[in-house]
Each structure stands twice: as structure tokens, then as C-alpha cells.
Amino acid sequence: MVSSIQGYLESLTQTSPVTVALIMSTLAMILTTLGATPTLLVKARRDDLLEDLIDVGLGFSSGVMIVASFTSLLLPSIEGGGFTVTMVGFILGAVAIAVVNEILPHEHIFKGFEGWRSARNKVKAAWLVAVAIIIHNLPEGYSIGVSSAYSGVEGVKVGLAIGLQDMPEGLAVALPILAITGSRLLAILIAALSGFSEVITAMLAVTLFGHPQALYLGLSSAAGAMVYVVSHEAIPESHRSGVEKKATAGFFLGFIVMLYLDTVLG
View 1: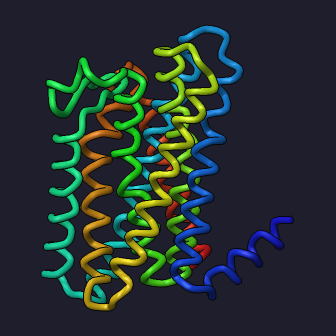
View 2: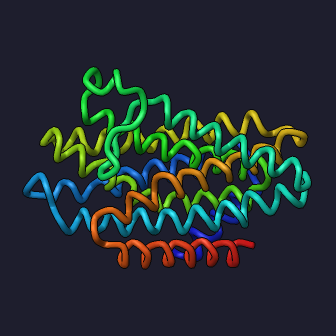
């Protein structure tokens, strides 16, 4: 079975960039949804074990995203587009996601509410949590799209890594929503919706940055957006509940997994 999966992935790298982006972002959405399924087993609205897993998972996601940002996005951009283009894109990507973060009302598990304050009492708490994860997912889908536009191998590599780290993110959105609403079905549906946002951004990115002159700006801007999310959102969130050691272990595991994928897939 492992050999057949590997064979399929190798054949996928030879298809069109749009096909790679669609399949890998859909895989990420599926894994996000699967990551939310442990909420079906939660008997109470709070589960300390699952909350610990969220912190470890956010650490894992951070490790994956940091390595992917450098090996699959920044380095190819520097090699093909030069340092100046890469730094311009890197800064633009970070600024863009920072603006989105400031404008869209959302709420984190530990950091609390961010965005337009006037919207806090107008939007249901469950959707505020969902928007926080969607903001987190936007650079991930974007990265799948631009890396697929660069090459099939990079698209598969980044897609696999993003998909793996989306599983704890699915739990990170589902568990708070379960605590707020008491509905397991709604928790899983909103987690699936957060994963679907990656499909949309991946398809937009692979279309917009398919032209060689725009490609390297797309790669570096995706890296900037992901690094911003890691620094501003993921790491602070994973270190606010007294499980910093576990979250750090998750970070190193994610770092190693992404390096392994980078090595194996070339």
C-alpha cells in the first residue's frame, strides 16, 4: 500500500500545477476534518488531554511551516528571482496577513479577541473562533498553490506537510466550538469549512502566480505570510497554557518531519 501511494504521488508530480494544487489542498481539507473527529469522543465540554494536544499540535504546525517557508518557498524564490524580489514579496506577504488579522474579527483560545472591536458582540463566538483558524489557514492554502505553480514536486511536498499539520489544527478549531455550542456536528462542520478555505486560496494562488514573472513574488509572499502566522499566532498560542515543553517538542517534531519530506521527495 505504501508503494502504491508513493507511486501515485510521483505520478501526480507530472500533472498540471492546477491538478496538483487541487488534489493536495483537498487532501489538506480532508485531514483538517479528520483532525476534528476526536471531539465525537469528548464527554464534557472541556477535555484537558485534548487541550494539551492542541498545544502540541500548534507547535508541530509551527515547525512544519518554518521549514517549508525556507526550503520550499524562500530558497527557490531567491534562486530564481533574486534577493530583492524575494525580500519584497516576503515583507508584502507578512504585511498582507497582518492587515487581515487586524481587520477581521476573530478570537483565539488564549489570546482572546482581535480585530474590529465593534464586531465582537455582533458575531457569534463560534464563528469568531472559526475565523481565527481560517486566517491561520489562508497562508497554508496559498503556499500549496504557489509551490504547485513552481513545480509538481514542491506542490506535493508542501501539500503533504500542510495536510499533516492540519490535523491538530482541525482539533484546535473544533474543540473550542464544542465548548461554546455543545454541538459536535457543528464543531466538525466548521473545522471542515476552515479546511475548505485552503482549497480556495490554493486555486487562486496557482492561477494568479502561474506566470514566471509573478511566481517568485508569490513564493516569497507565501513564506512571509506563514512566518508571520507562526510568530504572531501559533507559537504564542501554544505557549500560554503551561505546556511549553510539550509544545516545543511538537515544534521539533514538525521541523524534523518537514525536513524528512524535503529530503525524501527532493
